[in-house]
Length: 142
Image 1 (cartoon, rainbow, N blue to C red):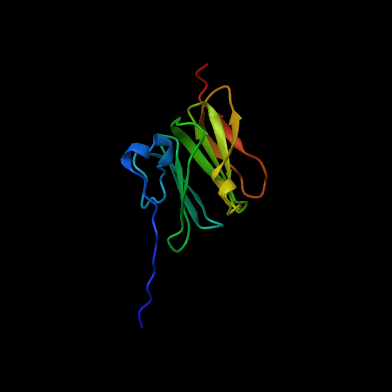
Image 2 (cartoon, rainbow, N blue to C red):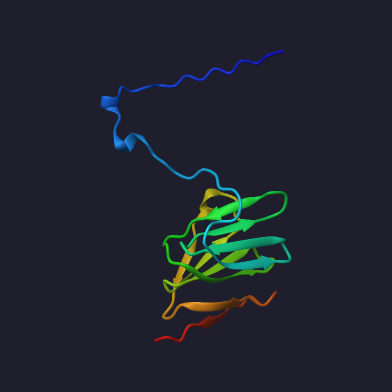
């Protein structure tokens, strides 16, 4: 038995095609990101994250689950940590700022993050399990 799937595509003459008619965006990414700068692991949820020099973070889960998180700025990632078991990823950047992602939210809004501006850029992050606190080691360059 053969199933036939027909797709109709509307076409425009080249003279009518405008730059706004085309919207390029990344729809898939596979493997480790280029220019990795920091990593972290959540042993409770089995998540591994890689931060890059262009500010992005990629989270790897079980069974081939991957999510690429795009930051609001392209500042290099300096450090990152999971709030273990709580579903949050905190990414420190050289902006200086922290980007907080809610990974429990599986909707498109999870791709957005909350940004917290700092006076100095973070060099280390620690989120003691079950404490609800975040310890931040600062650069101290100012």
